[in-house]
Length: 493
Ligand SMILES: *Cc1c(COP(=O)(O)O)cnc(C)c1O
Image (cartoon, rainbow, N blue to C red):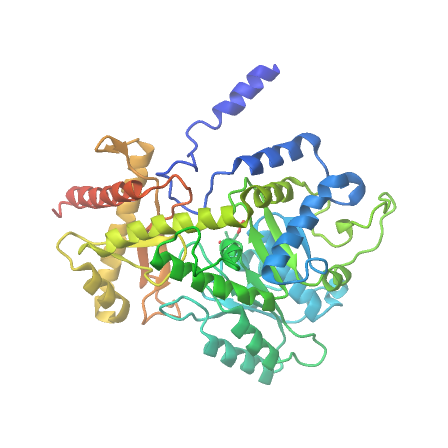
């Protein structure tokens, strides 16, 4: 085909795609790329450096090294001793984490294969990539041990972790990796790496195994770290008092990542980079790179000191993710990142407060400090806050949980239908939202044995600076209208 026709058809394939930068798009952690990041990423496609090694990466490899250095500095690691490799997403970071833990725990497993039931410990809120990585790395999904979470904060229950690690220690069962989840896309759960470190250090592995490593899954929450040195007293960016407290708390928790051995960062989430831009960052480059080192290959000559080909999972590696991340950090700077993250947090509390004022809806994730508001919707005559408390705590209300889950799902689907149909309310299109089918269990079902006693809710996930208080008012109005429409269709009002 002639090139013009090919391009025309390619353009055609983007028709109907959502605009992630539109203020009414609040579906998930799907950001519009910033201009610097997109330009950097596209240039990487045109000139195509290959960061397999310095000769093919040339100067472009600085993007990977320097981004790793910048983030390591923020964490409080020595940037010249730390290292980082860009990889295929937050799931790739998890996989690198699992591999690092397994190999560190039992180095000879690189040759013999995984022959021991080494445990990967994470919280119940941990991302489902724990399945991808334990499965693909061959340690097996059954070796992932999930620790219950605190019911209000969704953070890992530290006493339960202590008990579990003690049990493994007493039974001489090796633990390869303990994962701290530092932000999630549903419940915005945060674990406390400082406390996890204390416990991990109490329980060394049995003879023949090196001690467990700690990996922090920061892929979606990492940008809170940019507030590390924010002047909370002077508050130069003029955040509201409530948001300031949240930021302060998150920044404080984030200081704990320095206790980890490695962490994962997605710049294509709360970093406004185009896909894929994810970095697996390790505190000690010498340990990681030696542990994973493979021998030289005849057709690659070592002409520079930069040779990830000897320790990365991938062989050819694009620099686009590293370049986008580097350009974004330079363009935003710390203050830019603070302004964007804090600004969206302000807008989140607009919808949060609007929901809290209503009697027919409630915020289902009240304690969470990320961008997400999970709105549990009820019929107009139901006292939402009372009902939600009963649903969470009283097994006699199990049938209500199921009934209102069905309502929330239907409202979510109605909103999706309206978004697809460009339905308008007051002349303005309705938002593109999503819903969670079980971001948490009821309090009598923490072991998840009862598949139905979980909480569904409509999800508001603003991701763009163009989202304003008026957009949030319209959003909530649309949610209520979708609820009324569903009940009307069901003949219930
Ligand atoms: C999104 C996410 C992942 C997976 O990251 P991808 O970049 O989508 O591969 C892993 N962990 C957490 C907490 C996430 O939010």
